[in-house]
Length: 319
Image (cartoon, rainbow, N blue to C red; front, side):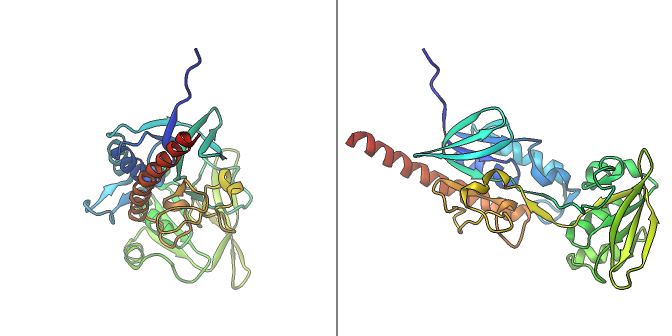
C-alpha cells in the first residue's frame, strides 16, 4: 500500500523573524505548519551584532534573539526542514513548494525569504571573499584584531557594523557621498568613536591582495576623479540589499526590482500565497516590521485555510 502524501495547511519559506512569527501564529491556531529554511534559522539576525530597538530588550545580540524566536516558533508543533526552494507551482486548489530534493503539497504558502547583500561587483571582490572580503561583521570581525579595515557604505548597516568592528580594529568608512544616510544616533556614535575615520566622496574601483588575502583597496574620488590606494587588511561591504525572489518571479507577484507586492493582509495577487518581512515591497525593513508582517500573515492564513476547507468540502459534497 502506497504511503499517502502529506498535505500541509501552510508552508513557510524562510525562518527569519517574519517567517518564524507566521509559523508561531499558524501552528498556535492548530494548522499543520512546515517551515523550510536552507540555512540556520534567524535570517539576518544571525549576522547582526546588537539589537537595541526590539521591544522587551534594552539590548540583545542578534543570534541570541534568533534562537529565542526559533524556540518560540516551534513550541506549538510546527515542523522544520532544510530545503532550498526552487519554485512554487499552482496546482488547482493546492500549492506545490518544490525544493532541490522534494516537493511539498500545501493549501497555502508564506514567502519569508528575506533579502541579501548587494555586491560592489569590482575586481577582487569575489576572489578575496572569505579572505578579507566580508558582508558580516559578527561572523568575521574577530579575525581582524588590531588590523586596519575599510567599511563600504553610508547607511545604517555600514555605520552600525563599522562601529561594532572597532572592538577589534581601526575602521575607515568609505562613502560615495559627503554625508552619511544612517540614523542620527548611529552617526553620532561613529563620529565620537576614536577608532572610526571617514573617506568621503569615494567609491571602490578594486579590492587588492596577494595570493592569500586582501592588502588594500583602490578608490576613486567621484568629484575629482583622483585614484588612490589605501592599505587595509579587510573590506566589509554594506551597499544595499536585494530580494531573495528568483524562485517566485514566474508567479507575477513581484515589482520590477523583484520585491514581492502584497496588500496590508500580506496577500499577494495569487490566492493562498502570502509574503512577509524584508522580501516585501516596503519602506522599513526591521525585525519589528517583519514580526508584525508575520503575525498578520499567520492570522490571515488561518482564515484562508478555513475558507479553503469549506470550499473543497462543498465541492466534494456536490460531486
